Length: 250
Length: 381
Ligand SMILES: Cc1cc2nc3c(=O)[nH]c(=O)nc-3n(C[C@H](O)[C@H](O)[C@H](O)COP(=O)(O)OP(=O)(O)OC[C@H]3O[C@@H](n4cnc5c(N)ncnc54)[C@H](O)[C@@H]3O)c2cc1C
Image (cartoon, rainbow over all chains, first blue to last red; front, side):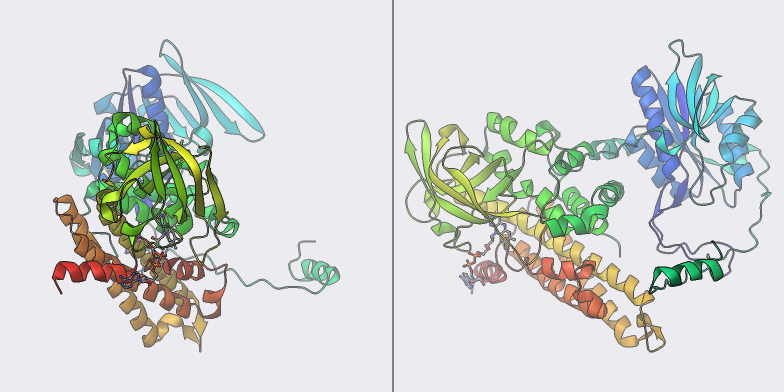
């Protein structure tokens, strides 16, 4: 069995994000970069499938700048077997999906697991687009995954409004990981050391023969309005009045 | 600011893991645990599970591999992301308690004491200091007299990090005559009749880490708990000091770095006289001085680590690194409080805590004066 899993390079959610001087992106200086937390969950799930199946291979893929090697090394340190980095600039979700399709065609995995979204632009599109382009079944936002004994299908539990939905998808299929799917492991030092020797293949996006012209152009970016300072009221009456006349929520 | 010169790719990855662990497991509770003067015991196995407790120790004994360089960066990141120095030093008391067992202990002792500690199942402490004196190690008075298959231990120890909860204490005792040659190391287990924690001490800083006074009254310890040969204790203690001092120096670097980061963040937010604090050149220069002293302490500490890994165990350089780092840390934390103004004096601010934590370093692990004694001896004046 082969599992292909994604690892996008995103700013650490703990970092303070500032809009850059040209107003069309974020200031990258001083930012720490991490594996997209939903991808970390995806990697963990891939490793659990591998551990349960025994003879499985986990291939971790990142599409982005060459620095994304760091995120791939994290995936390898957690336990993935090898990594593929597709380098390219200014790639929007559709370009990333088209590139991912090429990698899937080349690798023919049984399962592709992506995070349900990346925490930088929160698009929530790559998984769905990739499945669509491949013509594969997809199970999105899953919180539980069970591979059938004969490995021909996977039972996926999805969190939907007010309950759980369980669906079965024939393999190969694409799955996107939700927050509660698992708690990702920490990469151990021995794992980190081993990761240095694991293969990491680099491919240029341009060499894959896909049109990566962006469909989305960011025109401007602005920080959310600063939150106004709170106010301490003297009495409940004053609070009620303020909620009625100023906040207009009562 | 970016790490030590010795850091390679794996150190950076280890930092990311330690950062993730501390941000999730320590930071949310830092204030609460510091105020309560205790962190949950369950944190030891959590840290072991995350592969962080055993960093710097051989996989053969249940460690996570790597060397002191890995242990130091993991601890630094735990301080930076966890923001509770007390918790990190409490979790790290095995850093001084188990190396003597690893160096000179029998396989049986390693299996009984080292592995369970690195797996987070047992808490360990090192006890050298006595109420009667800490600097003059050679004159320690806790006696261990041989009686058949046991040593009968009488005496007391104080200022023992993690001593209140320790499952065993690597204890320096006098088995022989006066001075250096009469000192041995004995593992004394909790529950041994005659061994009691006489007091949990209240301190200036390091609140989340417990510090104990221990008492031994006709405490019978099996001879099988002697580490190495009788009389080898003093050398063991001295060997331990080099790594302990590098570790303390790097804690100072971490604390200085955290105080500095908190100060930079605060000075971009706080306004006075119509501009942010960072708008005043005096303040920017203060931050620049802080950054400079941190960089210098980091450089010297890093150099010592490199030399140590090359087989050069220089007590005098470790002493220099410790003094440089403690001076830096005390000064930087003081400046950080100053930058925070009244808030810097308030318990709810991290820098207030760091200021108190910093005061330990010129005392613990050998005082500033004792470091200078070591340097003087080596320099030959
Ligand atoms: C929070 C904390 C945690 C600690 N944890 C541990 C632990 O886990 N295990 C452990 O064994 N110990 C521990 N210690 C003890 C610590 O190592 C000692 O406090 C330290 O070695 C100093 O010993 P002392 O307190 O007896 O001071 P003393 O030795 O009495 O020194 C008092 C003063 O005299 C100075 N002085 C002494 N001799 C000389 C000299 N020859 N020349 C010039 N000046 C001199 C000292 O520098 C100091 O300023 C801890 C201490 C603290 C505060």
